[in-house]
Image 1 (cartoon, one colour):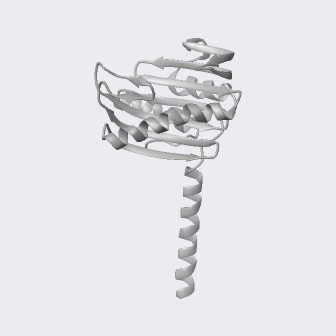
Image 2 (spheres, rainbow, N blue to C red; image 1 turned 90 degrees about the horizontal axis):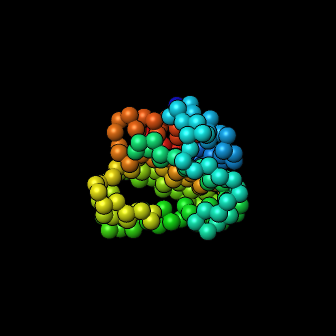
Length: 187
C-alpha cells in the first residue's frame, strides 16, 4: 500500500511540474504568417485589413523587421518583430513596470498573471483601469477600461492581444486568438 501511495504521489508531482513548466513559457512566434493565420481564423481579419503593416521600419525609435497592428472595435492586435531582442524586452518592460505601478497604487482591479525571465515574459490581464489613469504610456480619460488579454515577449518578438471592453463576445475572440497561438490566457 505504501508503494502505491508513493507511486501515486510521484505521478501527481510529475504531472504538476509538467503543467507548471508548460504554462511558464511563451511560445515563439517567429513569423507574421502564423499571427495572420490565427487572426484570420479567429477574428476574420486579414493582412489587408491591418491599420499598420510595415517591414524594416523604426518603431518608437527602435529598428524592426516587421510591425503590424489593427483594432477591431475594442480589440487590439499587435505583432512586432524587432531587429534586437533587447528592444522587444524594453517594450515589454514598459508594460510590466506600468502594471506594477498600477498594482502598487491600487488603480488596477482584477486578475493579473505575470512572468518575466531572460528573454521572454507575459502579462495576462482581466481587470479594470479607471478613466484618467496611465497604463503603458496611454491615458484613458473618457471611461473606465476593462483589459482582457495579454502582452507577450519572446526573444525579438513582442505581441499585444487584448480587449478594452470585457464583453463576453470580445473575451471569446481574444481567448480564441490566444489559444490559436498557444499563448497563456486569462482563463
